[in-house]
Image (tube, rainbow, N blue to C red):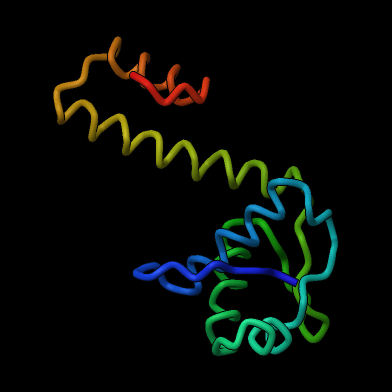
Length: 124
């Protein structure tokens, strides 16, 4: 089952989506593994089943899971969600570059930021 540390100001569906995505991408959930039923998750986390259903729908749109009518939701094949994750990362990176350019950062400065973040130095 999934555990959540509730964070104020962030919708429950987004928190749950991030947690499940983390488990899938991190390899803690394997291809074709069945996800817990919507009602089961809702009961365990004491949240509305509609919140869980929304989360599963969002994960399916991202390519991380797939659903079989009447059978449940399952972890998608890695190749399927790897391309979805890459696409999402590219979109977010593109927006970050646009924002950085608007703020006056040069390509050299952006490269320094990327290197610091990827090396987990955090210091720029």
